[in-house]
Length: 279
Image (cartoon, rainbow, N blue to C red; front, side, top):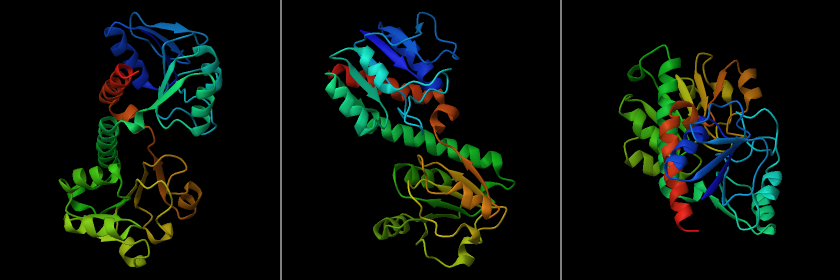
């Protein structure tokens, strides 16, 4: 099978090698800053292919191909035009607009985020990477810190599980009453967003996983409080609001590719292989 990998970070580079080892013809586009594996061909423009692999997420904040290893911006519609009728497009968080454009060209879209094994593995890597980043930035041992995790999705749950093994004072903040009750039954104290300011003032670190704003007022936290943002853009912490509150915010999007690209690429490879078997 001829597979075109477009954009992405180190995960895409490693994925290219894995697919080449599977016996596929692998081409890479918009990755000219990367050192590609042996046998993988770089192309200056998209070519007709059986499958097109887009990054996770497929688009950047400007609606263009997410290609940090590419030198030139590229519209995903241009890739669709070149891929040809019948091609399968595989990517992460593919927008409705791209899905419609692909369908108009006789192409099928498959999203990584609809593969349960991938989403859980990706969340686990993200959570572990967040713990590693927190340990790197903190001036105290985790066992001496009070940590607030915002959001009770896949990443939030796994993050609380991992942190609780290292820190006895891990708390959840969620707008969802059932989520707070479940977390409490599992041994994690939980807080509503409108909890007293003096409680928030006691936290040493806040890690946001919620895709929308949950924390009502960042000024409640101490200046020394570590803020980590894991949620996809726009996220749940406003950088301008954090700056106005005198807080140092670190945005950690695409963390799997930065923290553990090999493991993240293996998760992508497994998902791609399963998708290709079904088309």
